[in-house]
Image (cartoon, rainbow, N blue to C red; front, side):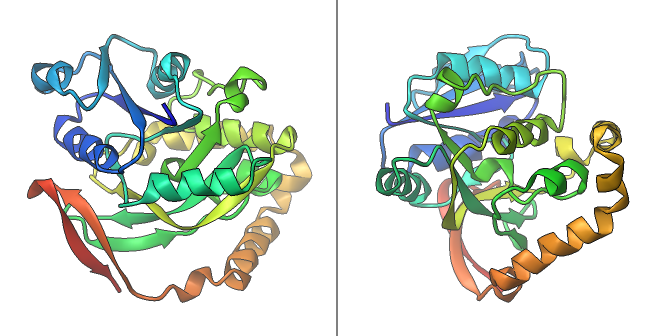
Length: 269
């Protein structure tokens, strides 16, 4: 398999159907592994029967434990994880694969991400920037979104960079800090690849996220905590120079709760 996509799932049956559809129509060779933590929302009635995925229904110790389980089962050369409330845009995986082919030294590729509402309407953009150590450590906002991250198998086989299952919400932050510390070669895709849906029940909007963020910030050097406003300002200047605040309108296609079987085309103003 060229791609292996891991989706951790728990009580997200309706959103999971959209996620699976967005991976299945990418037009590339892809293995989609769904790690469901024994959901009781009806997912067990249809998930094991869906031929588009490899479903593993078993209890886990949280999202990052589920992702790690999926990564250990994955056979692809390019890996990623996509939460149940997220989707890939058309042609995303083909573009990522081409980026890796053109840059064989690159181990991680970051794509841009759209944030949409429950109906699929565009709310805002999250264009990726290569992570910097102290911004990742002390800022509330990451320079990349997890659904826009793609990485080579070497990252886990040679570097052992699995996710820290001790975190429930911000394990990707710790993971990105390790990327920076190990000087992993990273590259920006330069186009929108994924969609994150604000469902009102996203894990990142819960109280656990605030607790884990406070824990991470407290572990940062004192000077970095004091310089946080300057670090954030520097990040925003990087975004400004990259043209992130001048995004032009464009059309995009995604699956919605009202249209789970076919993509709907919308316009991002």
